[in-house]
Length: 506
Image 1: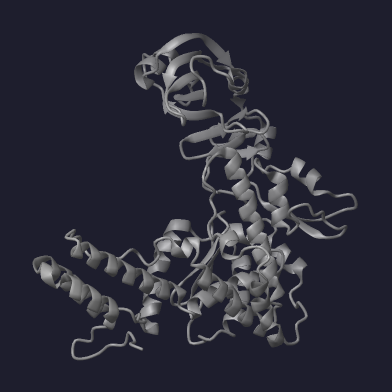
Image 2 (image 1 turned 90 degrees about the vertical axis):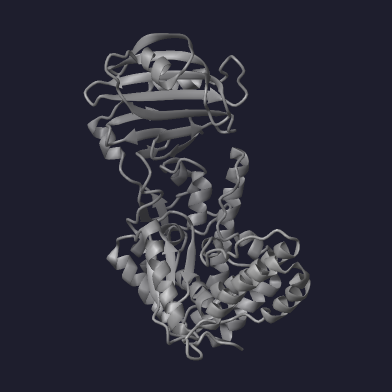
């Protein structure tokens, strides 16, 4: 096997030589067409063995990419929880095949359910995936899986395969006369965030199960963890289908871990013989208590949604949407979509223009063709309510219910628009749009108490506690029952036992 150690007088690694001569060769082939086919066969054979990377190079690469990851996601600032995750991670990593590495375990401030690793010992878990763990053994399963990706060098192996494929593609392009620049995609261009091939994912499960068993954790937790993550994929796919959008499935647990795969279960359980003195020394209660008070959801979003009411504490406003509508916030404002995704309502802000009335602003600045309307006052906000013949919407140009309200003290305009997917001239959801517009109001002192960023709360189930009742009181706007069940390992229809600690969002 060729290693990435330095060779010869130049001190260049094999990787450098492969890159250098591949570029030179492609330029040569473009100049001498008759040599293309022979070189295509020869170079493909020569490059078949993958090169490796020294530990020093691997650590430098991981450290460089670590800076980018932190800049992109941010670190979740909870020293106690971070120390706890590091303690579990180091306990598992101490049993790995690469004890020479210094491992770094970081909680990312992101609600996406994800965990990944960089070469050189860098392991990441998000707030989102921690929300879905229910014991330290399950956390150890996630960390063991990611440590295994590092010890088995899956990122580098995947990179080598991609590089060979890219070189073959480039040579094939030259052979056909279509010369292009030799480029290799980024090592971290999606694979670490979206998962590896089924081969690598299952290998990480099997190897990670060995590490966690040697550390004193039951490999059964690996199987429980995968089932929880598969359940989350299921509700995301179901939700995406109802909203008629692509599902946001990150590691693709359903594809890499299909149901009724007995060989997978046997491979993970094969590590049980390595388990010694296992006593689940970290109780589930202790782990759950570490999550108490952790932020829930997208902390970068604009405002707070509680049930079907949107609050914007900074601007001091609120508005209520029809029940069952899916509410999403963004940097520009807020958007709500009907249950069957055939209607959308949006709220955005703009600066007032001196000398222009509310209607004139819509016509002259926004560029709307207003066909009807009247001046209104809603909760002491003066403005205009009307219908535009055509306005841009997620469905394309549609007849649109529009309102514009003035906050003269802040010199702000609130622009509210509603459109339907199948509307031609009439607006099918106009009643819901108007009701939402007239719910616009200033926040009260009581509203400000309600409008706090949702957090994970760990509570003890009482007699008669049901997930349905908890979901009814939850601020989770979409699929609250399913999401709470997945978070607590009770999907699809489980109920908490009396005295059991469970996670809710409050």
